[in-house]
Length: 192
Image 1 (cartoon, rainbow, N blue to C red):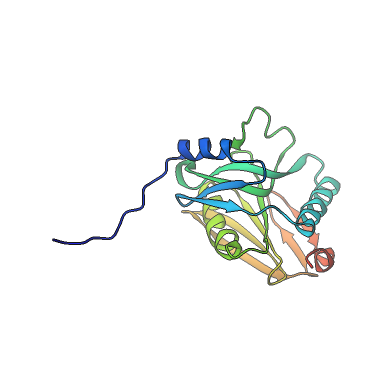
Image 2 (image 1 turned 90 degrees about the vertical axis):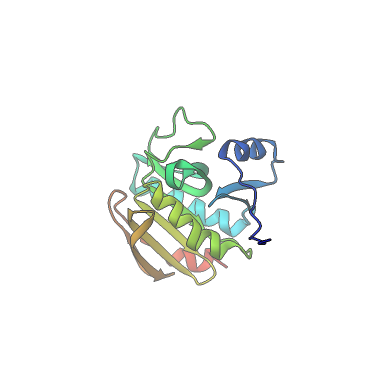
């Protein structure tokens, strides 16, 4: 008798959505690479960083809106469900969408790392792949652990072909279709 590797039961996206609907308000769930992931609630500094970025976008990109905590259909064939810390879309780009939006109008996804053990895997590895596979042109990762801002661009075959990682305080150029330059000096104080 051959003893094989034990197979994990596969959850379907519809089952995940039902589970997520029934979860308490204090629990935020994501479905990444076929696994249910609990996303931690943001702390105050995390929220301040997202608010700072919203303010910058409003000042420089008045026809684009950065929506916080937006559910997105990600990964190949939209089988993932990620709750982005921010998603930049043209004004009205989410109108008529349910809790989980298709990414067709998304110009940029934003994540700010949290202080949990899974942040490295989730925000630095899993989400870039899911966002790239969904065709989101730009992914901005604000990494509080190593105090950097990384811009991922040119999604192709489930990954971003280009990335630029700069320390907090640097000027970060986010290319088209966003086309904005961020002075990340405020992140030095907000990230602590």
